[in-house]
Image 1 (cartoon, one colour):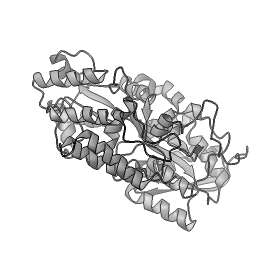
Image 2: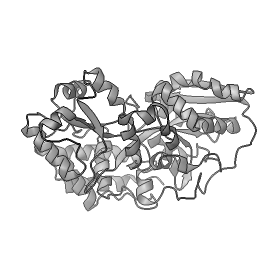
Image 3: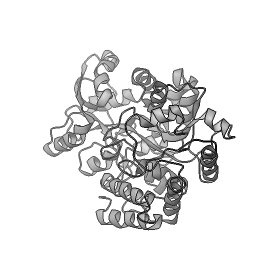
Amino acid sequence: MRRTSRRTAGALTALAVAASLALTGCGRDSGSEAGPGASKAISDSKASGTITVWAMGTEGEKLQEFVKDFESANPDATVKVTAVPWEAAHDKISAAIASGKTPDVSLIGTTWMGEFAKAGGLDPTPDGLVKDSDFYDGAWGSTVVSNTSYGVPWYVETRVLYYRTDLAKKAGWDKAPTTWDEFSKFAADLKKSGVKYPVSLQPGQTGSWQTVLPFAWSNGAKVTNAGGTDYSIDSPQMTEALGYYKSFFDKGYSQTRMLDPGELENGFAKGTYGSFISGPWHIGLVEDAGLTKDKYDVAPLPGKDSGPGTSFTGGGDLAVFKDAKNRDGAWKLVRWLSEPQTQSKWYDTLKDLPAVKSAWQSGDLADDQQLQVFGRQLDSALAPPAVPSWEQVASVIDGDVEKAVKGSVPPADAVADMQKQAKSIGTGL
């Protein structure tokens, strides 16, 4: 959540896998649970034996202590957590699957689910383990590959609009923009009032697809066809969205270079930047930079014609491996980690946002108005398709976004190139 990682896009932040699933019909139906490819249900007894777990980043550092409650409830079970750096995780998991020497369960970057499921390394989610309707659509969709779930969402994140309320009021705005037209006027008014860059957007480079695609999804664009077998990036909706995104750079509303670490937060605090799009981790960062809550707020992303718009969902999934030595115990641990009370406690421990909707109904998550904005945004958040080649295609999109933003190619040509290269790569399904 608060850190950049390979969990969601090449070497940068992470995203999820529900976008195309929700967009193209590859996701769930109202009555499904694990999906048509679900594996056999686990037993009703308590967990037993040793359960080996790989977890990345801060999650890996905190999980061993956290699972003591699970061990207390399952006295014959012992959980052994290995912390793995995010930068080494993809290759480590890939090698483990290839050699058949996997742990029982692991945290999986959401954009890796398609790759590892296609490789045959993941065990389909057992029938009846959890109810998919308990989770945010985008989060559950990140586990679904070719209509079969291969894991359970653990935690989520999404992106919203951060904006300086004091600067907005000076420019004549008492609330955040809710449509594309309003967002453009919001930027124009802030510019007129003296804000150097009314909006800070990413001008291409790694991870820019995570900001651009939400505009495309809000405009009705789809990333793949209904079966996830072919890319469908080249569409009028995608071209229009990229053109709209580019307009903020053309009009001088956003900077045209990548910012250095800390530059955005400090610039936001000083008023150089009037707004930006990011996840929940930025609440702490902007306040560390000196902003108080009376000078900034968060709001759902503007929609094409009405709000809220579609945002991006990321986070992390828990998956059990086909070669797990303790499959039964592993899935019971995964189920325990997805229980609402466990999710709430995990938030209190690490501030990872719960993937289970009911966990937002009590405690700080229910009382904090800013966090509630993220919860509402998750209701309309999507993610990229759960296909093995997504990270390759995401890199293509990043490059073409940068060309369009800098004016090297028109948006239509950039989108056409995205499609051409994506079709050449294939989805991998």
